[in-house]
Structures are given as structure tokens and as C-alpha cells.
Picture 1 (cartoon, rainbow, N blue to C red):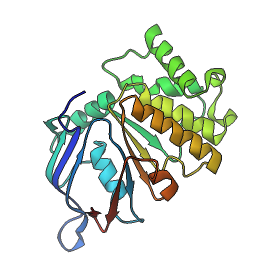
Picture 2 (picture 1 turned 30 degrees about the vertical axis):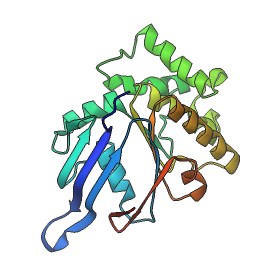
Picture 3 (picture 1 turned 90 degrees about the vertical axis):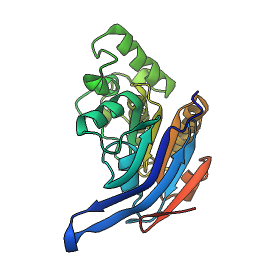
Length: 228
């Protein structure tokens, strides 16, 4: 495992709009995430935490400041270059699951390989990997089921398996337990701990204290700045 930080932000600013309509959402954010970290990012609505996650996850780029991913400066990279980094190194898990409704659990897990330059969607090895991931999240007997035939917790498990298909270095989870009951929430958080213990870096965006306390570190945001 590399001793260099996985992610480094230095004085990152994000501004939407221009002139008198400009809104400063992130204000000189500096942050380091190391390989193997498990971080909870907390803040009220409008604090900037979702914008920060979008920049960390290469879904957006900063207005100014430096962003290094695995030692590479990517703050000013093109949309295609950021997409390549996401496809090769980053996994996402969302509150709404975002599964394709007419596809089986197995095909949903395989879907990110449509854009992969490393793994072939149609290869037997890719299918074997997807099956092993579904088995890992406890859905060995649900691989052919569509999302409508699965509970909310099972759908989130499919989403977790999907996020792992590209063997990412880091997982970003945006309010991943927001649509789940308390018992299922505990099961999903247990799974995050297992993934983190296997070496995957995890960042969870949440407003729920019970979720944040499972992380190794808690980062709080307010009005676009970090409260350290």
C-alpha cells in the first residue's frame, strides 16, 4: 500500500455563477485522505458537503486550488480524463440505489464495465467477478431478480456490489442508509467496515450521527468550510 496520500486538496474553492450572482460554495478547503481511511463527512443542508464529495469523486472540478489523486494533479483535467479516473479508481453508492429497473441484479452489477477499459463486460471472468461480489454481499440466491423484486436493503447491497466491480481504490457513499430501516442500516455499515478492513478507502456523506460514529474519522462542514 502506498505511503503517499490517496487524495490531497489544497485551498480548493468552488464558485457557481459569476459577477453579482456568484455563490461561493467551498472556501479554501484543504484536506488529506490516506489509503485505508474511513471518513464520515457531516454537515447540514447547504454546508457544501455534497459539492465537496462531487469534487473528491471527480464528478466536478474546483474553481481554483489544487486536487491531487494518487499523486496526480487532476483539478484542471478534462471531463474525459476525470471519467477515466472514475471508471478505474472510484466507486459510488447513493441513497436512491440508482439501479436499472428492467435489469437483473447481476446485470446491474456488470453495467459499469460498459465504460471500462480494463475489464470486458462480456467476458466470463467479468461475470464471475460480478457473481462473486453478489455472493460477498449476501445475494447469491438473488442474482436474477430485478430491483422491484428486492427489498431496499437488498437493492443497496446490489449497489455496493456494483460499486466494487471496477475494483476501486475509494468508495464514496452519499447518504447510503437514508432509505433503510435501522436493522438494515446496521448490516450495511457492517459491510462498509469489512470493505474498509480489506483496504478500500471509504468516504460516507451523512447527517446521521449513528452512521458517522462507525467511521474512523469525522469531518464536519459548515458554510463551505471544514470545522477541524
